[in-house]
Amino acid sequence: LAKTTQPISMDSYEGQEVNITCSHNNIATNDYITWYQQFPSQGPRFIIQGYKTKVTNEVASLFIPADRKSSTLSLPRVSLSDTAVYYCLVGDSTSGTYKYIFGTGTRLKVLA
Amino acid sequence: GAVVSQHPSRVICKSGTSVKIECRSLDFQATTMFWYRQFPKQSLMLMATSNEGSKATYEQGVEKDKFLINHASLTLSTLTVTSAHPEDSSFYICSAKRDRTDTQYFGPGTRLTVL
Image (cartoon, rainbow over all chains, first blue to last red; front, side):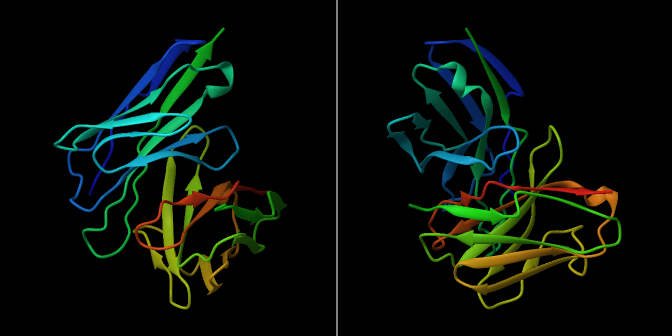
């Protein structure tokens, strides 16, 4: 199973770039890497998804090395409203059925 | 696009009663829907996977007779917590995918409190 490991928490200041790394040593060939943001008492919100190399959208970038055993979510200039829990999710479809395992997530606190 | 709704957003019930939670994909057809449970300060835990028109697949440790899942159409899945007890109090979140390669889109969650 593609279990993920992330730092439990991070602090940053407004305007800084934040990089959150996730390790997923058992990622399968067909698995994509997806990052979500979750605020208290809300469902996770999709941020970005990638398979390899680099993906960028209007809110974040995702860096994936060639071996795909880790990935890094980069938030360019964080604001107070980015304070949330961030999860990386790797789908495990090796058994023919879906097996999504959320890791502990990273609790990001943005300070003024 | 890709909006998922849940109803109700929060529910309080007495121990022993059953509660139904609806999950709808509003602007797309979802071939697969997922149900998660999240306790305070913890991560999401996958409970079951349901495909339209077939029986749900439950994760190990999740009682299928207690958590009944119905995925009757491509836009609706329901989770019924039968004979709810205080330990079932949690935040229940559904998600939906259009197809196998699609990402999951999550609903806003339902806060269940069993007294």
